[in-house]
Length: 267
Image (tube, rainbow, N blue to C red; front, side, top):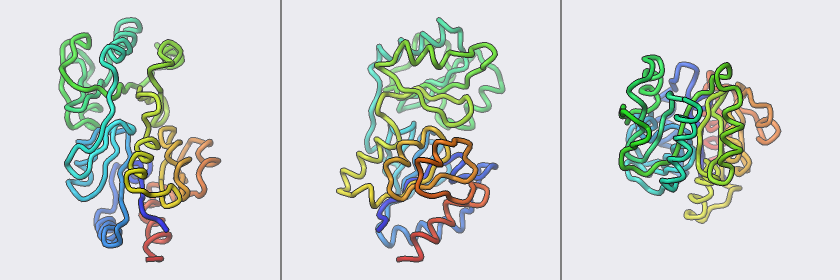
C-alpha cells in the first residue's frame, strides 16, 4: 500500500514549459488527502518557488535538495551549514576561482551579487522568489545557509567541480539537477535523507513510498522508495538502473498518469 508520494519538480512534475495540468492535479490531490496519502514536493528549488507552484495547501515541501522542510506554510525542519565552513566554500568559488554568478541560499532568502549579468539575474529571479542583491559575498547577511547554486562554464572553469569536491570533501556534497547545474549541499543532506526523516516521524516504511525523479539529485530518493519511477525523458542513464519502473515523460504528465493508474485505481 502506498502512503506517501514524493515528486521532483523540473523535468518530472512540470513539463518543458514549467506547467502542469492544474485541474487534473486538484482532483488527484483531493483523492489522496481523503485517503490520508501524503503528497510531497521534493526539489532543489527554494520553498518560495514551490509555494508559487502549489500555493499553500496541506502537503509537505522538501526544498533546497533536502535541507529545508515545510509543512504547508510552516517551517517544519531544517539543517544548515557551519557558518565558517560555508564562508570558506563561498570564498573559494568567488575569490580563488573568480566566480561571480553564484546563488547563495539561506532560510530567509537567497542572495546574488548586484554586479552580475542581466541574464543571470533573470534566471535567478525565476527560480528564487525570495532573492536579494548584495554588494559582496564576503559580507553575507545574517541567515542560516543551506546551499550554493551555480552553473559551470566548462570553457572558463572546466574542472571547478572536481577541485571544489577535493578541497572540501569532508564538509560538502555536490549534486546536479541536470547538465552543468551544480548545487553545493551538506553531506548526507539530500532529498532521500529528508524523506527518511519524514518516514521515521510518520512510522512509515520505505515500502509505502512512491517517488518520481529525472536527475542526479533524485538518485537517493529513488533508491529509497520501493515504488520508484524514473521519467522517460531523463538523460541520466544510471537512474534507469536504480528505479523500479519508468513513468511517461514530463510532457505527457507522466506523474499524474502513474498516480491515477497505480494508486487511485486501487483505493
